[in-house]
Length: 273
Image (cartoon, rainbow, N blue to C red; front, side):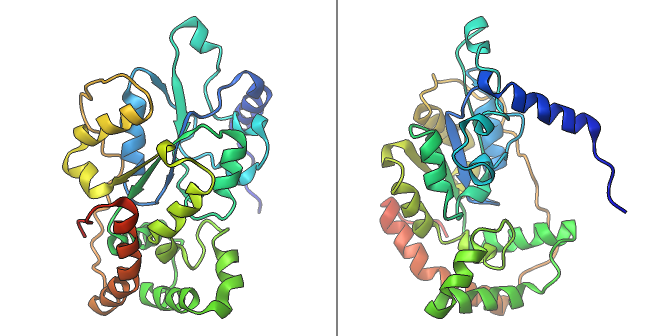
């Protein structure tokens, strides 16, 4: 039996779309990576008095509606509010953008001057956290080690290139756990579409060790005046009880080693993991 439509939600969506010409485009985007603290970072940004939240943190408009400036506005505040009260900026944190092959160009085509904030975390811990999230919501069925070993095989063999390209277009594809931790590779793809001065790269470990210092760097990057964050919202707590198998952890560390070396060169700093 099909689920009855949520009439209120459908009416709100219709209103947002109808009023899109009056809405702002995003000034900033957090494209990822997933499970790296983007929800907490977005909340910290949105607490600044010069920022207005989007209706949805992750609208993923630049994947779902490529080339449509109208639909790209539908989840953001009404722009004329800037003239009634105070000027504001707005943005989103659709982490599915990070590895999607079309997301950088689609984003540039609509908001070429957008400021981007990327967040990276120990890729082994990130992969496990991602899998545990899907275990918790019931959508992950296969054992983590099976998925990881298959992904390593695909990513290591050029013959699987068509499967890799197809998988990167899906939100929860079989390569998600590994691909989202190949930070330098995907960051360089974004830099093909955006000037590096528009991009800020934050390590999750740095953010959670000293969030107030890191958020000030983000405010400056977004062109916001300095403002003291009263409290640091922690948007999500993993609290996962299961532990990763030590053998698969070793295999993951070996897989990510060259990617981490590339990231260190890309960022010009040592990594904390």
